[in-house]
Amino acid sequence: MEKKVSQHVTWVGKTDWQLTRFHGDEYSTHLGSSYNAYLVRDEKTALIDTVWLPFDKEFVQGLKAQIDLRKIDYIIMNHNEVDHSGALPELMREIPDVPIYCTAKGESIIRGHYHQDWNFVNVKTGDTLSLGKTTLTFFEAPMLHWPDTMFTHLSHDNVLFSNDGFGQHYASESLFDESVEDMNRLLNEAMKYYANILGPFSAMVKRKVAELLGMGLPIDIIAPSHGIIWKKHIDLIVGKYRQWCEDYAENQITIVYDTMWNSTRTMAENIADGIRLADPGITVKLFNAAHSDKNDIITEVFRSKALIVGSPTINNGISFAMEGLMEMIKGLKLKGKCGAAFGSYGWSGESPKLLTAKLEGAGFKILAEGLRAPWVPEENVKTQCREYGIAFVKALA
Ligand code: FEO
Image 1 (cartoon, rainbow, N blue to C red):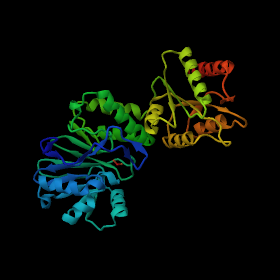
Image 2: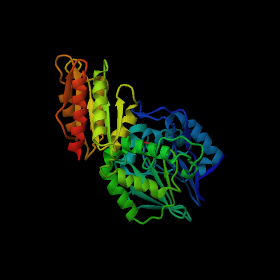
Image 3: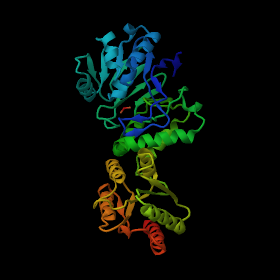
Image 4: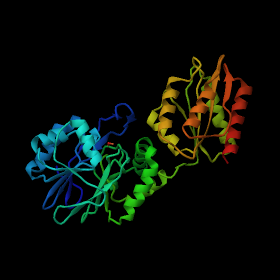
């Protein structure tokens, strides 16, 4: 069935309802995803992006049902990670001479992946390609989120093909935001996508969104390469991106810990009580790093103004789960957030110090010396933890 996006644009991607992991095992996709590709049919025909490798044959068969492949005049590759370029080899076997429009970086990435001498045309910001009544305008957007990334604008229909930008891992049989019943769920997926994938490049996002809007191209539809297409809520998602790229923080403190025999957990819960005692208006959320989804935790850290992390001391170090999570947090290059650390111990007790150093290394402002407590917390230690939470909120003010 043809899925019409606008007068000249048809969706020719793949919806992947069963996807639970993305980027290997790096990213959880609780709601599946889609690999959006688009066919623009005017006097000339352009294909914008392809789909992930496992669906390459299905993709090309689907395209054949829509169009005689020989009628495709141009292939536009906005970004060449395998989830978008994976079907390119299968397609190019059928139409090997069709020019591939991409950035110079895009060409080198495609060559690095597929080792083929295809007909590449490098484009830069402001370059155009006429399709007849409509014109494609290219816009380089390096590091949103790979160095090759570009956006493509289609005049007349006023569609911005933004690739990963404004995307979400959200499977749907409907194309548009107006069909989404629970907008908060969609926005949460968009935030998770931003926090985990685009967040480290927020400075570029800020610059590029301003530059793009400054070009004055009319935009009635934002068509990303994953998930729902924005049509009714363009101002909402663009507004969110403008907030998220500016050291974003809600009135939330997140506590992430690991625990062996519940001592560090008890500390976490009493620190949380202290925070609530000091300011009931602050949202406090607790996660066990070994049990909760790491990407959901990252999203909560992204939306928080402060992060308090805890681990028992294990073999003079911290737990496996906390080590992995702190490595992920470091990579996010978060700015403007505060932190502190705690943990239980039996004899050596290094974990709060180690976690504090990791928080500092990840760019957090440390508001309190690490809190450590031996063996199983008694009432006096629980009180100490609550006081720690209260003092943390005061230091945060
Ligand atoms: Fe959706 Fe960066 O690929």
